[in-house]
Image (tube, rainbow, N blue to C red):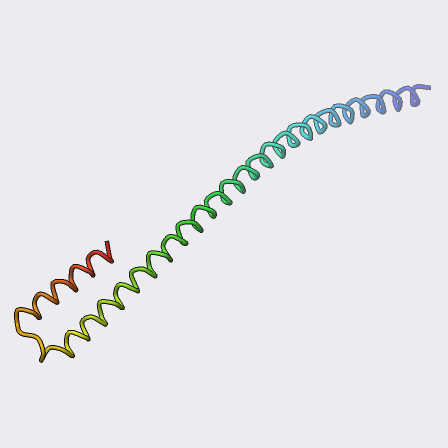
Length: 113
């Protein structure tokens, strides 16, 4: 009888320890689930920020490409104008050549502004 009583008390004590551990682990699970929810919300926010930033970069890139094409066209026009001036150099007097170069410089500044 004493042995059975001892085994019962030992089993009850073990059940209490295991029940306490179960309660502790259940509390940890609840805490971790809350942290997971918070991190999921942060991830969602960061993904939105990243998508918004990418949209801004894409728009800025489109503007850059447009301005680069304009600048390339202006540079090409200036190069052609200079080449034409050099070809007709013999036809122009010194003063006329200077005026033509000033006009080219003005066009280049306007195009690159």
